Length: 158
Image 1 (cartoon, rainbow, N blue to C red):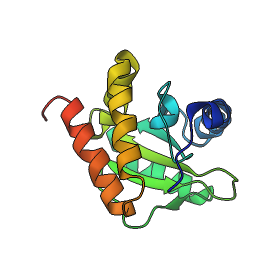
Image 2 (cartoon, rainbow, N blue to C red):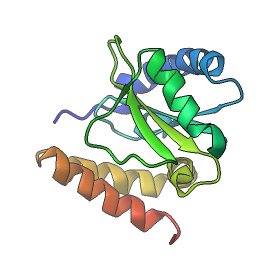
Image 3 (cartoon, one colour):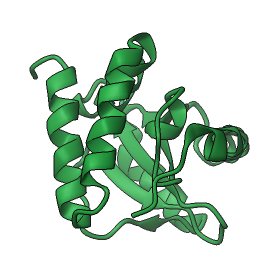
Image 4 (cartoon, rainbow, N blue to C red):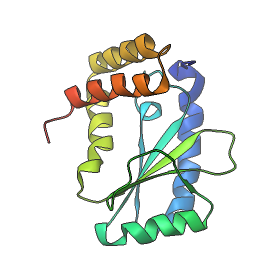
């Protein structure tokens, strides 16, 4: 797997997120759009993908997912799906963009907690980058497991 230096992708990612945020606010009025993942963390290396968290009131989660599917977003296969979380992929784009539709107040708001922890502590970014570099030649599942272990170590216990 190729990992990109922040200078190679972060400015483009910010532009993409701004554009997508405008679209999402029209599709799901009142949603909160959060740029998450490595592209939202200064100095973080990445596979080059972009992650956007769409936070909606819990009682509107199902309707928000349906509105996104109607707009052409596709539920990401083989990912966790609950009444509080649904991952979708953006259609027809030249950048790998994923949405995490999250119910407000749910445990899945950890996407922002992790982002904020790394933004506040550059040494955590260095550790995260080292983990990614060391796992880059592993299978996709092993790469995700290595990241998940680190993420769990950064976040407060549930």
